[in-house]
Length: 261
Image 1 (cartoon, one colour):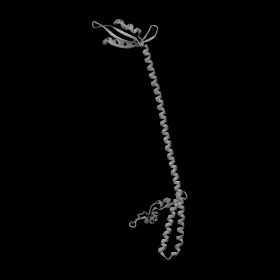
Image 2 (cartoon, one colour; image 1 turned 90 degrees about the horizontal axis):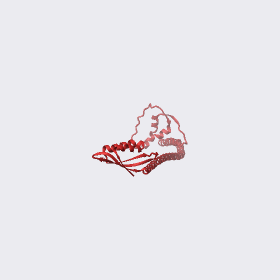
Image 3 (cartoon, one colour; image 1 turned 180 degrees about the horizontal axis):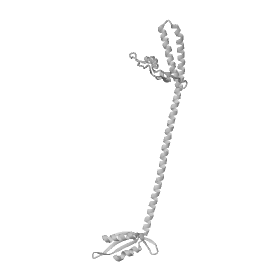
Image 4 (cartoon, one colour; image 1 turned 45 degrees about the vertical axis):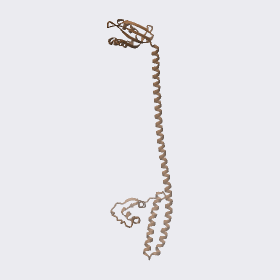
């Protein structure tokens, strides 16, 4: 620690000779401020260059000296803080290096987390697609099973209807003189034919039959369905049709249209 007491006239030129050139403006402003504002105590740190070019850092407590109300000089207590500055610079560098590494590591972790998030989203999407595909396969298998079942039932039912129509056809000549019985047998044959058409449609849906596309008059088709509809209606209901006679023909399967009706 050094104590200097210098006159105001000699102070700045001597100190500026020691101050590192890039700090001289700062030191000049520091002393000008202290002297103009008559600050009794101040503190300044600055680098100094020795005659052999070595650099030291000084911490300086400055006190102005007054006489008869006039500032005539200043007294400075100067300490060598070079080691302290080196330590501070080292700590600053270490802190900055640590912050840099923390930022780099944080960026790496954020990048890794983003990749992981994207991978999880992709896996979730693949899992949803897999489940949807499994559901579609299961649905197709159920439909196939239902088709096989419907085809088997339709085939067996068609055999029964064939027997019914055969026996009804054999019985019809035996009742030629009995109008009521003959009408009943004809109704049985007609109903059996309608049921046979339904079984053909079931076979078509199950893949064991085929559709027959033809021109169909909707008004005539509705009239053909009258008997089937009336059997399902209440006896108290009255069924009336208002059908246009000039409807255009449509293309479709007559058996399928009756089934959907």
